[in-house]
Length: 83
Length: 83
Image 1 (tube, rainbow over the protein chains, first blue to last red):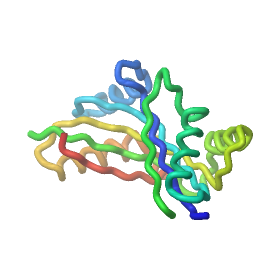
Image 2: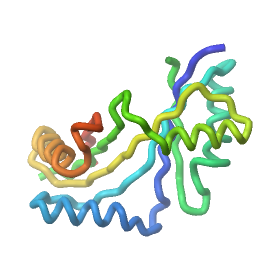
Image 3: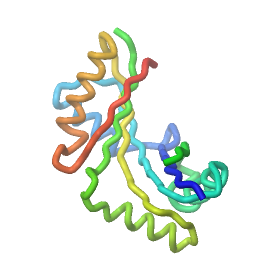
Image 4: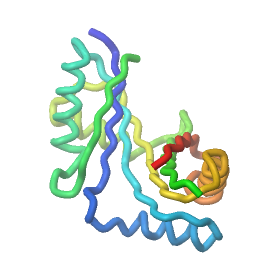
């Protein structure tokens, strides 16, 4: 078994409203910052022992689809690194 | 002016309790998944026009220190990409 760290980034699909990101953008603008757009995402770093990289990726994809992301609202991206 | 996208990742400092991450880890374990640890982070993607990469990085660092991260609780990481 090898120790891996998976990084899962969960973003709202484009077109889905993100009131928290809008509030953050407006707060930055109120502080005098100039920016064109701000989007927010959730990131999960998962440490796991797996047979190989493919096994780690399969298991983390299943975790993401069952719990971490909602396929109606979110897109996700997974990267796997050996620890 | 050049259009840049900055990615700001805000993590809790190690040692700071993260009840949301613990709940997520326990939920995955209850679903039958095996994992060693789970950490969560917030990610912000900021589009901005700047003179150059250094100007973009300086402004995003200031945004992060003034609003996006709390230096007592968080570590942060900034990457800058040309759009």
